[in-house]
Length: 319
Image 1 (cartoon, rainbow, N blue to C red):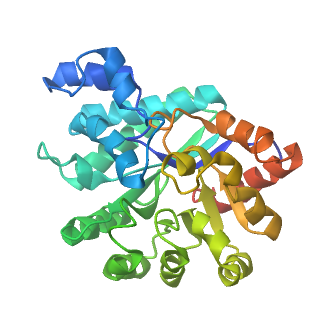
Image 2 (tube, rainbow, N blue to C red):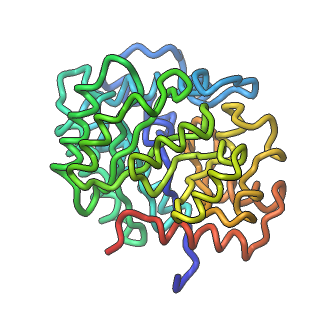
Image 3 (spheres, one colour):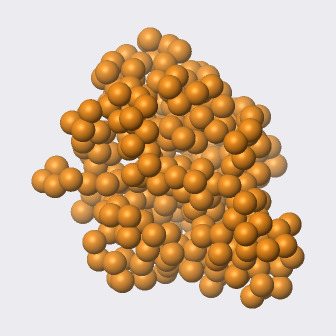
């Protein structure tokens, strides 16, 4: 790396909307929110201190998704997130979202994706210091295989200078990674880059399944600390883990920040990276996450730079 980078490889659009934008879009669209004021909207979009599970954490996405059903709203949300990241000094970001969650007003996944691409491109045009891409998420579930396969088709169609990969997100503890073989067979058939949420709400076997699909990146992957053989495999295959410390504590992947295994994984030789996951839901950003690494988990400045180097090497948009 020729200069210091601030990189976000793991960042969800719907978990990073500005609360005031959700409030404004709801009023524009005539949508009744659970919140009655702008302040309450902000409160309900952030994870409570007593959050107990990933499933409870994911409820913070319900309200933003209500307003992300129109092309103009998707474009605005994508633009504003690129703007927010640029103003933080982030110079490379991969923003992920699930097109299939924005279909309730009649849009197709292609239309949803085109709107987000437009927002990202407008953001980069206004803030030329940042490069941003989009990762299209399939969703864990038992009734949405057709929607997931359509997401893969959409990713194939738009893969290029903005759309850069496919992921699968959602309730890992309820819908195991092994259920999505057909989806990732198609991803591999089309040679689309991938990252897979695994080892967050499920154990090492979920990560092994993700690796069997051919992924070189895993979202979270904290469960690796439970399995020395898996750690060795991650090192040998140069797999990059997209770790999100604050989020992992909030979803009770770890019982405290101090117990988070990111430093132990790093010291073992695993290619770990630092990410925000959901800037609004987790009330965080890349600088807060780096502060936690240094002040709570014992990372040195040089070690943090190594994490950013790993992230830079693992990015999907290389040119």
